[in-house]
Image (cartoon, rainbow, N blue to C red; front, side, top):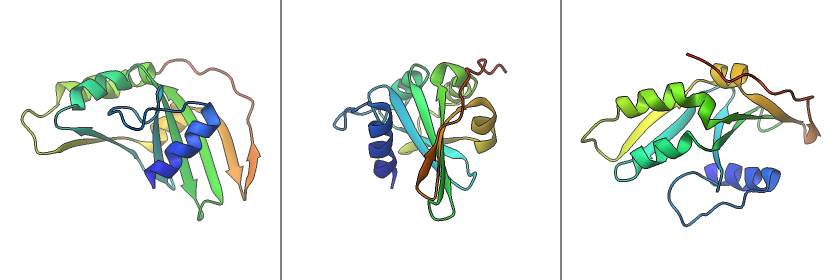
Amino acid sequence: MSSDWEVFASILVGDLGKKLAAGVDLSQHAVKSAFNGGSYEYQYHKLTGKKKLRRDMEVGHLFFDHRNNLRHVDLRYVHGSAMKQFFNKWLQEYPDPYQQRYRKNIPFQWVKENGMLLMTLTDGEITYPKTTPKPVARG
């Protein structure tokens, strides 16, 4: 469940979040998960969606990719400022009016190529790759 990934991310990055507040999953991070290289879904609700979309540009995004019945989990990080190409386009295309939720996706391959791999869990063992900052994605 998404709440499980949020709790795990909260522990890993020390961001307790504001569970009773609308918006990003933690105080300074959005948490997304995908199975076996699937895309990461973003949902924006009817009344608060545009505000959340703008906030997504200002916070970090933690992307979990899991497979093989959780025997392999990768965690990647991308700051929202590096994803403005998605968020700006989604704001421009934001339907008005629309039903309940506006759903958009960020492809796994984009996250893999542009995100910083923070850790890998393999059969319960954690490994931390040597990290170097990646340039902000353009276009």
